[in-house]
Length: 402
Image (tube, rainbow, N blue to C red; front, side, top):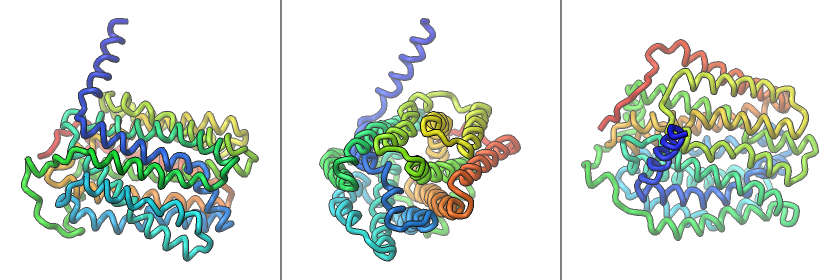
């Protein structure tokens, strides 16, 4: 009993001792994420109604992360030369017209133009969030910082879908207004973000091209390994984000049930702070991925809505149990002078994976049915397990590089 209490106290103490800047940017992510979470259960459904086919819907949803790659790589060249708190505030304010433009979309060309705008503000905001977080994370609490950040984002995605599911019956897609409204509230909080950056400790890094930034990433063996793992997790997760709402709607689920499903999928993120304090163990990650692979396989045959709820919850748990540990390792593998430029590379690669997910998912859904796509998720998790099992040089511990 005493041992359990000691572990709990250590866990709580480590989180409460995080810098105020880490806590505040995490709260801003919660506010911003809550607006998106209200709309999230019906995002793919909205575009499916506009575009009819799964293939076009997947292509449309893949455009945003695909376009984001360009913006992220551009930001990678200049992000370290600007205060991230100012970037965060300005971009949040740029979300004011977002919901109204979204609700006015009618044609595929309009959707393409909208996603160019969406990709710019979203990628700018997320790279600023992540760079700010990595710069302000203590070296010995990198995983805890990311875990706390993701936990608050997860909290938004637990509460938001349930509220969105309830409100959808009354306001239909009008609930998308929440995106602009919550971004405005987050903007006012962002004005209070501490502006101390790593400029006080380090000189500005020399200007580098995108190719040079990529070379820095490629030559960092530890960073490259963990980025690949996170990218493959993003690819598999992007199938779920698109297809679970569409699948449950096709099976006759009511709006509140779709909201509950997506809320359940986000529940494990509430425990990221706890998972982030568990020592990095290769074997434990392999076991979590093996469970996830089995659950992807179960999704290929699941037809009952409530069974889908259970599988979605457990699958999200398997992903969440390893994600903050991998992100923490990415942070510690980055030299502090190059956090901005290297974050742009890791973010771009994760976006490439997230773009492929809906595109592949839409194509195979039209060709072989939605359930076939989950088998691809099974193959991805299988590939991750094989990579971990046979990569003898896969790092266990990394000291932060200055």
